[in-house]
Picture 1: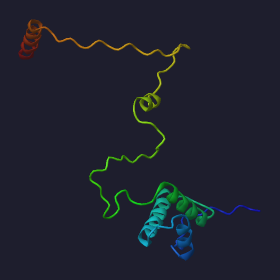
Picture 2 (picture 1 turned 135 degrees about the vertical axis):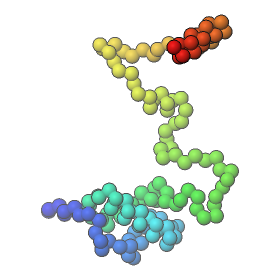
Picture 3 (picture 1 turned 30 degrees about the vertical axis):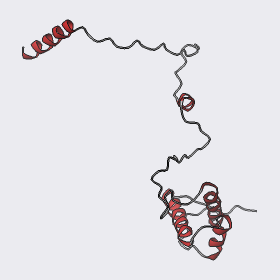
Picture 4 (picture 1 turned 180 degrees about the vertical axis):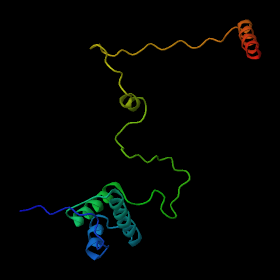
Length: 147
């Protein structure tokens, strides 16, 4: 069996009843407005990227299942704005935040001549310049400007 040729987003691909049923199968609580919004997002997304598929109905089904899996409602739906919410939306909920995440995301130091990288010791805090040296350095700097 020969594979079907991939095509760009077809102009006749519209939101009809079979596509609505497909979306509602995976998202039974979706309103008509949310369904239309998701279809327009699907259309704009694939037109923007210039995606080509051999089966656009399968691509829509995948979009519908993805919306069911990751949520498709806006963060603050009408009338649900909570000014006291402390919840932070996270794309990857299993990635820890804090020191562990920072160390794993840090760029590793290059290995030179086969040696293992060693953490550098911390630098001592900067000590302030004594006032008499500070005045002398400032006078030297100001005196050098006018000459």
